Amino acid sequence: MKAHLLTIGDELLIGQTTNTNAAWLGEELSLLGVSIERSVTVGDEADTMRRELDRAYDEVPLVITTGGLGPTHDDVTRSVVAEYFGKDLVRDPELMQRIRDYYERRERSMPEKVKALADMPEDFETLKNPVGTAPGLWYQERADDRERILAVLPGVPPEMKAIFNAAVRPRLTERTDLRDVQHRTLQTTGIGESNLQEEIGDLSDLLSDTLHLAYLPSTSGVRLRLTAYGTDPEAAEAQLDRLEARLRERAGRYIFGTGNDTLEGVLGDLLRERGLTVAVAESATGGYLGHRLTRFGGSSDYFRGGVIAYANAVKQSLLGVAEADLIEHGAVSKPVAKRMAEGVRDALDADIGISTTGIAGPGGGTPEKPVGTVWIGYAGPDTTAARRVHFLDDRQLNKELFSTSALEMIRRHVLRRAAQPDA
Ligand code: ATP
Ligand code: MG
Image 1 (tube, rainbow, N blue to C red):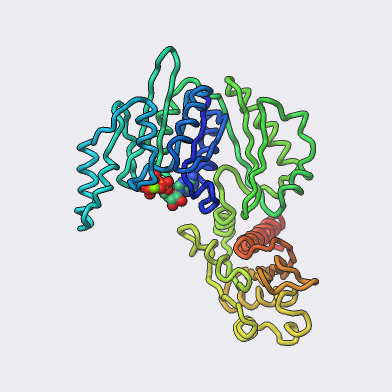
Image 2 (image 1 turned 45 degrees about the vertical axis):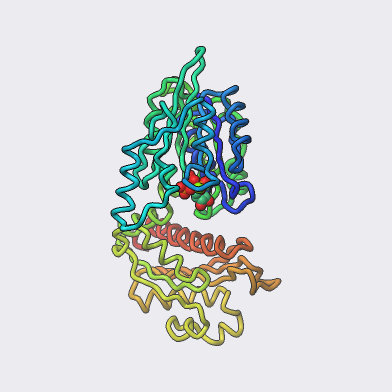
C-alpha cells in the first residue's frame, strides 16, 4: 500500500519545530509495510493543503496528515479536509460532552473556540485519543473503483503517536496490500557510522532489491536495520540470517544488542549477572552518566552512586586526585581520569569506578585538547585504565557521547574479565 505523508504547520517550515512527526511516522509506516512515496511539509495554509491532497490522491490511496487540528484560528486542517471530500462539519454531541467534562473536572471555564474540537466532517470516524481530548479523524471511500483513505492526526507528538498506535496501526495491519516485510535490528556502539561501514565492507553479494541494510546513528551508537521483503517468510528469514551472520562476523565486537535494547539496559543486566557494582566520578558529564545508569528499575542492584566532581578542588578532596597531576597534566588527562575512577570506586565501596573528564564545549578547547576531547577512566577490581576519545563541538551531544563511551568502556572490561574468570 502506497502513502503520502503531509505534515502541517508554519513552525515546521521556518525551522522553529523539528519535524519529528514525519520521521516517526516514516519509520513506523515502513515497518508496517506501507510504502511512503512522498513526504511533504506545508504551512497552515488552506490552498496549499488542498493542492497537496489533490496531488496525493492522484498518486496513492492513503494520506496521513499531522498538525493544524487544534481550535485556534491557524488550525485549518479540519475544515480543509471536510471541504475536500464535500462534507459538512457537524458538531458531535458525545465529543462536546467529553470536552465539557474535561473543563469541569479541572474547574476551568471552557473557551468558546474549543467547541470547534467537537466538529466532525460528516461520514468521518473519530480516532480515539488515549492521552487527550481531541481525537484524530479517519475517512475512507471507494468511488469509481478508486480507494481514498485519510488519517488526520494532531501535531503534538505524544498525542499523534498515541492515536496512531491505538487507532491507525490496527486499521492498517488488517489490510492485505501491505508489503511483506521483516525487520531485524542490531545495536552497535563504540564506532562511528563510516568506520563501521568500512569494517563491514562490501555486501553487494548479499544486498538486493529484497534485502536492505540501513545505518541509523544516534548518540548511543549506530543501529543496523536489516530489512527483507518477500511473500515467503522463511526465505525472508533466511536472507536476514545470512546478513546478520555476516555483520556479526565483521563487526561483532561492536554489537551489544538487538531490537530495542539500550546500552544502559544491556550493561545493567551484565553487571547484575556478574554481581558487580559501579560508582561514577563525573566531571564533563555533570551527572548524566549516573542518570543513564539509573534509567531502569532495579538499578540499585549494580549502581552504588557517584560524585559530580566538576571543580578541581572536588576532584582533589573527594577523589584523591593529586595537585601535581592537575598542574602537570591538566584536569583533562589520563592520570586524572584514572585517579578519579579509583577514588570513587574506593570511596563508594564499589567493584568498578568510572570517570569522565573532558571538554564538552562550546569554550575551553586548546590545540592539544580541542572541544570534544574526553578521558574516560576505568578502575575495576583488578585493572585501571583510561582512554581518550574525540567527539563534536556540541555541548549536549558531547555529554551524551561521553556517557556512551563510559558505559561502553565498562561493558568491554566486564566482558573481558568474563572471558578469563578469575583474572
Ligand atoms: P493543538 O490542539 O495543540 O493546536 P494541533 O493538531 O493543532 O494541536 P499544531 O498546533 O499544529 O497541532 O501543533 C501543536 C504542537 O505540536 C506545536 O508545539 C508544534 O510545534 C508541535 N508539532 C506540530 N507538528 C509537528 C511535527 N510535524 N513534528 C514535531 N512537532 C510538531
Ligand atoms: Mg494548533
